Image (cartoon, rainbow, N blue to C red):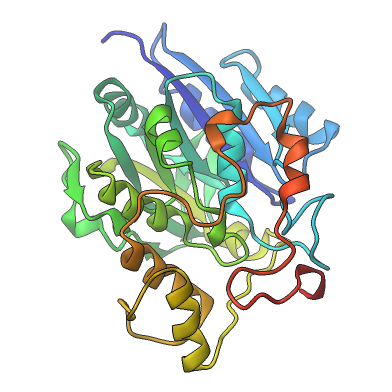
Length: 324
């Protein structure tokens, strides 16, 4: 097989991300000549952690350890009282730093199953947008990047039955889930990356898939790209909160009208997570709604300056961020 070029963006904000599991399981699968770089986007960035991550790969792959870019919702530049989950901002950080034409995002506290990289490199070579499978386990025992045993399986990917063990399967954009997401960098830049409208709430993965579908980009579910995640670490290992505020029904409809949407597309509560759905399907737009920059124009040197354009209120109900 010919070599491929890819940037793997590993996202973490946890005190214990179990990075060694990922590093060992990936590097054991790489083929000679594969041009792969690793970028760790770390919401708990420190020199000590950087040294730990560097030791974990120990020359087997080039690695850069970077802080998540400034966000109004978390980190040293935040406008909120406490740290909130801001995965869209962190993922966009990886896109700024990525040097390869194809980027794969991987969640932390996981082990890549055997065959993950072979399927991933097929996606790289083909230029497909893919979403890898996942499973959540309790009590994982891992040795040298191999899952030896688990005490219990607590969650299997809801898309599993749709998949195929021999090839990727096309799925709706709303089934682009974040355990492993791979896409050409240029495709993601054309839609301005992940939408920071989702920061503090979540859902930046499926929302990207919906927008890509509106852009005419097919999404594939790749069951062979299986990652197994630690339920303990995912449940208890993050210091960041989420918020899902609500509005009275009339105010909710008025807010939708300000996005140019005349009716709800998804029935349910009048909360911010449902409005993400209503806005995505109601605007039928491939572009982001909440990014205060054009991602393709950002560089490593200009990331700090994005603080000058921070929103001061939450987009959903316009509550001042300083009150959150």
